[in-house]
Structures are given as structure tokens and as C-alpha cells.
Amino acid sequence: MKNTNHIFLLLAFVLIFSNVKAQDSISDAVNLQCRLGTISPAAPRNMLLKEAYVVPAAHMYPEWKNTGVHYTMALPDSFRIDLRGYVMPTTNTKITDIFGYRPRRRRVHNGLDIKVQRGDTIYAAFDGKVRITAYQRRGYGHYIVIRHNNGIETLYAHLTKKLVSTNQDVKAGDPIGLGGNTGRSSGAHLHFETLLLGKALNPAFLFDFKNQKTTGDSYLYRRPGSKYVENGKVKVAGPEPKYHKVKSGETIGKIARKYGVSQATIFKLNKLSPSSVIRVGQTIRYQ
Ligand SMILES: [Zn+2]
Image 1 (tube, rainbow, N blue to C red):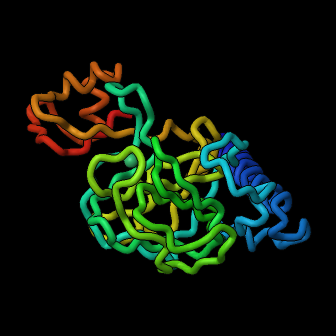
Image 2: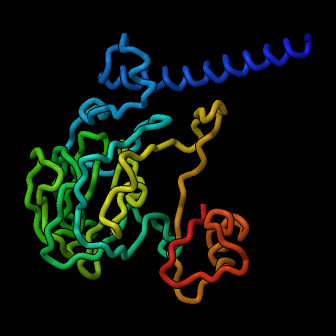
């Protein structure tokens, strides 16, 4: 009998503890949203339990400037990006370069490259407002940045022509420019970035160009190292996944050495075994 009591006590404790943790993350969400002005502090908690699609961009960003693409702002522990109402920026499906660090060139590629023909129409991915229209001779060429109501910004570069102007409201699917080869670019392509509070996220987390759709109704960003509760357990968000595109002559061993990770890590992340064959052009996750 005494043992049973102990078990009940333990169970009760576990339940209370996990509930407290869950409440913590809910109150974090409440605080963020209050700060962002999207809800009143008195908003019913059960409204938030549904992890609602929240936060119009107007309240997330402290200022509206027509310059500056990448900048550092404190990122929330988590943020759910509402992907509903999207339109693919291009009907082209071929990815010619992936997101991430390029060891060979020692620089970061902040977006995805999608093959387009010169003159192809480029569309606004979501509703929003054009924040930047500019020209960078040695970089983006003609480019556009739109701040969207769902809290992210998108960037479209190497355009032949811009069809919108700064501070213009746009709807998802509005033609915003024509694809091209301006700036630092060899061959017509769309360089496409998705940014959360100034930080470039891998567009492949949100958009599947090959299949011309988003990866889901929403994408949940978690800041690496932030804590969250899942199934009653406290977890720590891991580093953002990083990918490598296999080139001719590369092996798993070579890729592992290149990024300073173990082959076992690569096997595990990609559900491969030492006998697996990789092919040129394949995308391998290494983090
Ligand atoms: Zn690019």
C-alpha cells in the first residue's frame, strides 16, 4: 500500500512538473505575443494552447527601413511560420545550388539558387510589403526584399527587371520581377532567401521547389540551444541541419573530413550504411 502511494506521489509530481514546464513555454509565447502586441495580456490561455498562427510582421520588427538585408536581432526560442497562402516564387523546379557554408569559397550562401530563364516571371511568395528594391553590381544584381505578414522576409536576386517599387503592398502571387543574370551570377537563376528577423533560414525548410509546394502548413523554427517540452520531456533544440551536395569523386569519408564530423554522424543523419552508394548531385546532411 505504501509503495502504491509512493508511485502515485511520483506520478503526481511528474505530471505537475511537466505541466509547469509546459506552462513556462506557453507563458513565453504569451510574453512574446504581448510584447509583439498581437494579444492582450488577458488573452485566454487556451487560445495559445493551440499554438495558433500568430504575429503579424508589423509588430515583430521594430522599424521599417528600405535598406539592410541581414542583421542581428534577438530570435525567439521558437517561432511558427505560417506557410498557408503561399505562391511559389517561380514555376521552375531545378535547384542549382543549396543553402549553407561553402568551404571552398569560405563564404556562406544565404539562399537557394533555382534555374530560371531570363525574363521568367518571379512571384511574391506571400502577402506583404516591398521593403527593398535595389541594385548591387557585384552581388545580388537587381533584387527585392519583401516583408510578409507571416513574419518572415523573402529576397529575390539577379533579376533582369523589377516590377514593384519600395513600400508597395503585394499579394502572394503578384509578379514582382523578371528572372535574370544581373550582379554576381553566371547563368540566369533566381537566388531566393527566406529570413526571420534578419537571419537567413534555409529556404528548403519552407519550400519544395521540385514539387512546387511548401513543406507543410507551417514551419516551426527553434533557436538552437533553446529548451522546449515534448511529450512531457524537456528537450534542447539541436543545431540547424546543414547539407552538402555531392560532387564527382566524393565519398562519405571525404565529406565527413571536409566538415569535421564523423562518418557515423553522416550515416545516421541520412539513414545510410557503410555499404550505401552516394551519387553526384545528391544532398547529404552533415549536421
Ligand atoms: Zn545564390
